[in-house]
Image (cartoon, rainbow, N blue to C red; front, side, top):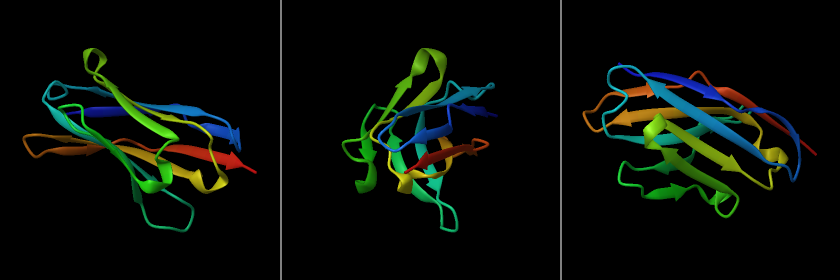
Amino acid sequence: QVQLAQSGGGLVQAGGSLRLSCAASGRSSNIKANIYWWRQPPGKQRELVALIIHNGRTDYAESGKGRFTISRDDAKNTVFLQMNSLKPEDTGVYYCRWATVLGDEYWGQGTQVTVSS
């Protein structure tokens, strides 16, 4: 089992920055995993924002390229999403998804990000 605790959301003006964290705990938290950040804008479907594979490879949705950076601290079982130059369209609830190489997956509780214009 893996428990995920998200933190770091909030209200920020356009052009500002936020860093989201997703900390894993539990007996399966040390299993290799691929971690994804998703977001759900108001009234829209959930969309993938960024991912980091267990080998360190990263990828981003076009909307976040050049502005978002996903990283991980394996010693702390924590993944971060640094978001810079935020835009109002980045507003939404952000979720981390933790998918172990054994096929189990877990979702964080979600954290609200609101970017004002």
